[in-house]
Length: 468
Ligand code: UDP
Image (cartoon, rainbow, N blue to C red):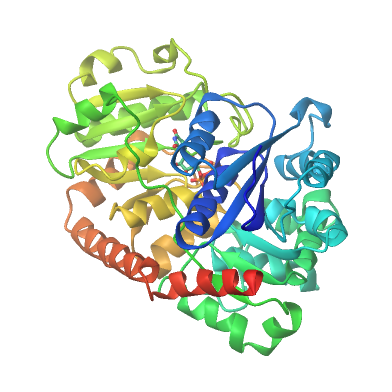
């Protein structure tokens, strides 16, 4: 690998497309705006097709500026019964020796290490050993950052039935918090407490949000005495850092199909890189989409019982025969109005398409931002991690989503309820207001990113500190 003599910055991504994509996009943003050379270190359990594309997009457009180094790890090396956060952190710890030797072998060593939220151990070890600037990139929002910084200072057991007050945020219903919040004796909670301390101690915290989107929370980092005491590091809202659909050669059949549909007429259904639903929920979702009488694209995976994150860290290679999980006759009845995609879809090409009218979304933060920057209203279907907190924000604070009172991660959402939510956005008057608000946020995102905008300036400030 040839690394130029320009100032060299390294980024470290933890496993999962939802972690790799924003890191790759941040690398591109840095490469586009500044005189830097970048290395992306990506810890990955198996390089599957989707991740190949993600690396590919970084390398092909930024050859010689962005380099990628894969640090392999395997999920099966870790206890199979533990939840995904400890597994993620174990994989990151496992990759540290390979990261150290890769950096050791570089002639022009990186002077700064920007890690994602789950990679903070590398800050205390590798960045410290090589005397690098230490930054964390929170690929989620300021609310989640505040939650994580605050968690080490929560001094009582959190009650699921009461609202929870995160500094600088609107109260969150207890039941929407991350499950780990209620079990302080277990490892995921302790991991988050450690991450909270680690994040608080870096040179700067980059967060994938922007001033107008979370003004109150971002202000709290500067103005709330409590926040200033627990996190000394400055917070830089640099978002939205998202993929913008780059044409990938031949137009996929799916995009050709979208080209034939009327404007804003198609509901896109996807649960991110890790989300899975049960067999019965798959049937209800199919029937609900049919009942809504709206066009749809649905990224479908084999159903998994009692595991909302069942496809995390798994291969996304296309799988045939998924129609056996759908109701009898569904594919035939809907073939004119529906498009089923097995396993993984080119979301960065789908959401910007003029035909997309709404997104049934698991509220992962990348997908949420991709919906906002494309002006697409959301039908919230949160499943795990901080997704329920995000859904609360989208519905209550931002008014850009609808959500059922039935909790999709815990209960069965029935077909009638699904059809109702889809029609609220696609057909009812309520949808007009939601669409207007999401388009306002789209405009404010563009403004923040444009030269002289708040996010543009925040990233420039970070780079200035690194290169000066
Ligand atoms: N994604 C995609 N195709 C799919 C599913 C997901 O391109 O079929 C991308 C999506 O565009 C987003 C990322 O994978 O950039 C998922 O990140 P998110 O934060 O939304 O959810 P996570 O997968 O981390 O839960």
